[in-house]
Image 1 (cartoon, rainbow, N blue to C red):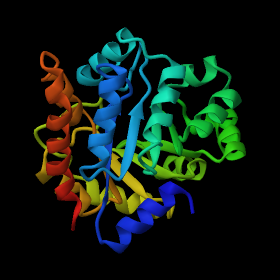
Image 2 (image 1 turned 135 degrees about the vertical axis):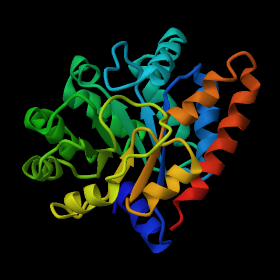
Image 3 (image 1 turned 30 degrees about the vertical axis):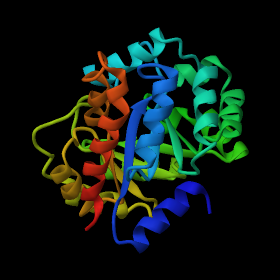
Length: 266
């Protein structure tokens, strides 16, 4: 089994959801980002979702937009992102999934990009703005190089589209719990149990839920129904809030991850 498959099999045996953490690679700088990833993986994170910094992150709210800007200003490039993955692989075998945009994959040559991602230690790729109807080149390259694909399902996706999206994915499915962009919300969407039932009618792939989840109570609410829970902005805010004292970023984000991950047990 792949690392992603092993992780979901493991969490099922423990009767819990997987905890998936998002941070932007290189935020606020390479060295701190590496230690942030180390701290997350030591504090309950099962799958690391690494945002590849991009100048036009259209699916992201202000928190993650600013994280990408900080990463780019610190000198992050595609090569540096791959290097970050290689450094993480020195101390962890947890699944790493790229959260990226198609222009970053296309501009480097799709096959070459996927091949280099695999060589660095990436397990899966989620290309936010790439619908499955236009993803043949990416899915072919991923199949050739052993990288799993992740696609997004929206609250507005009809059943026939859910089936098409599920057929294109090989790693897991990412259900966006509400319309709009990433960011912490005060209340969770109310239709998650129904959404999970609709998706599972079309696939046996694991389904994770993200967008708007920022407290342990919200993690627990989602974990009762989903195979995994994604938290991003609430963790990225730990970086933002301690930029003036960067030595406090790593302990702060580790403590927040430990608190949030405690909610995944059913």
